[in-house]
Amino acid sequence: MDDIERLYSLAGPSSAGRRSLVGRKYSNEKFERLLFGPGDPFCGGVDVTSCEFISCSTDSRFSISKGVKMNSVLFDGIRAPDAMMVSTATVLENIVVRGGKRAAGLWCKPPSEGDASDAILEWSRAGMANVELAIDFSGLAAPDSEVVGIPLSKLKWDPEIHIPVSLSWKDSEHWNDLELSPRSYWRMNLLRLRDFNCTEGVFTAPFPGERNYESKMEELARIESAGILKR
Image 1: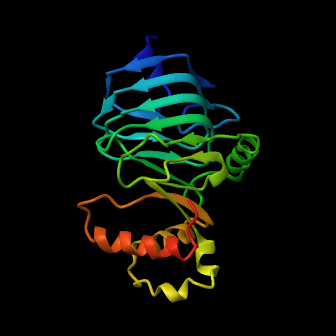
Image 2: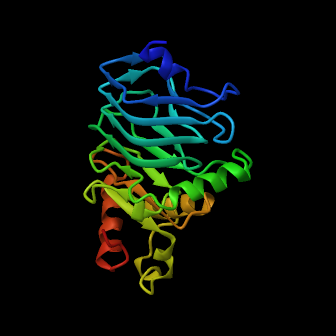
C-alpha cells in the first residue's frame, strides 16, 4: 500500500481493525478527498501521528470525524471547497492549522445529538483531559473560521484575527448598555455557542469588504472598550 492509498484507507467507518498513518509527509498533492474517519476507537480507530500536509488540495470534503486520534500533525495551506470540518468527539493534540486567506478555513464543533455514542464521547473527554495544546491555528488567516467545543485553554490563536467569545459576556453589567442590534454579528455568535451547548469559542474577526464590516467592527470596539472582551 503506497502513501496515498494508506491515506485514503482512513476515510469512512471500518470494521477491519485500527487504521494508522505515521510519519508521512505530503506536499503539493491533489487528493480525491482528505477524510480522516469516522472511527470506532474500541474496535476500529483511526490514529494519525507526526504527519505533514503542505500546500495540498482537494475538490471534495476535508474533515476529521469522530473517533479519530491525531497527534503532531501539520496542515499548511490546504485548499478545499469548504472549511476543514473537525468533530470534537476526537482526541487532538498538537495539531497545527495554518495558511493564508485562500486556504481552507477551520470549523470545529461538537457532534450533533445522537451522532456520536456516549462511549466515544467519554473516550474523547478522557483522552483530551491531559492535552495541553489541541489546535494551534494562530497562523491561519482564512475567513469564516470558528472553533467551538474545545476549552480555550487548549487552543492557540492570533488575537488580531480571531476573537474569543463567551456566553459570560451577557453576565457583564455593561452588556445591556451596549445596545447591540438583535441581528448583531456578535449576538449571533453567542447564539451559536448556545446552540452547540458550549460556553465559549473562537471566531474569525470580520474581514474588510465583508457585508456590514464597519458596523461589526464598531460593535467589537464597544465590547472591548467595556472590558467585556479580553484578548
